[in-house]
Length: 155
Image (tube, rainbow, N blue to C red):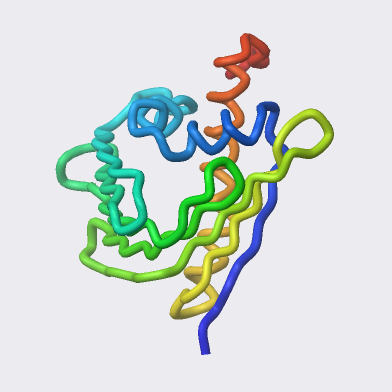
């Protein structure tokens, strides 16, 4: 049995802009730390093609780095992206999941939907819902608002 999660977020940009913000290494380096008071380490490389990989290393300092390698399984810009993701936390725990993302034009923006499957236990799935993806959506939204010059004063 595998555990899945599904999250959606309405974002203030076109599907092309959201897709590119999510997949472009230079844009990711910005949004990864956009809400941090003290940005940490962020290294990202992307080879955006089926069979290509995205590698990301991030954390507050060299002793607390997370690592993730995503292999692109399906790319249909700007509508859909599917990856196989293997991540490792600083304590050495690893996990492989499948991530399916859709970018749907809706109400003058984009409805971004993430379905991630393969979580080993409910607690890890729940952490990804409450922290990982909630944080990623907030960061991407702040980045897109900044790009459009519509960011709230507190970002």
